[in-house]
Image 1 (spheres, rainbow, N blue to C red):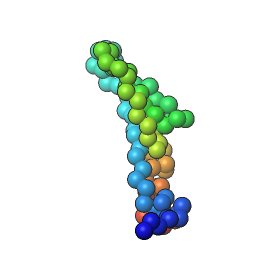
Image 2: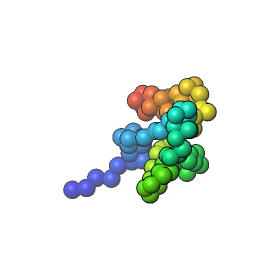
Image 3: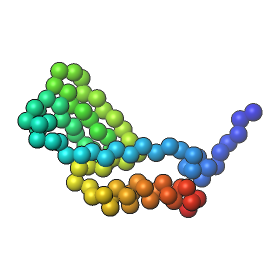
Length: 87
């Protein structure tokens, strides 16, 4: 027997995946083989690979390197805390 779940129940049980992209290190920049493209509107990260096909990943939220720790907390951790506390 199937049971319909309310939108609130689905929201409370859904796993959210966040990606925080760090700045490339100097060796990575010098190497120049692999780079990433971050699209915060589509919440995607594309890994541009030198000898292989690009790989695209979609997340619930993508944080670019310039986002602060406070921004990440406000948008990610606070959401988790609110779900945990049923807010």
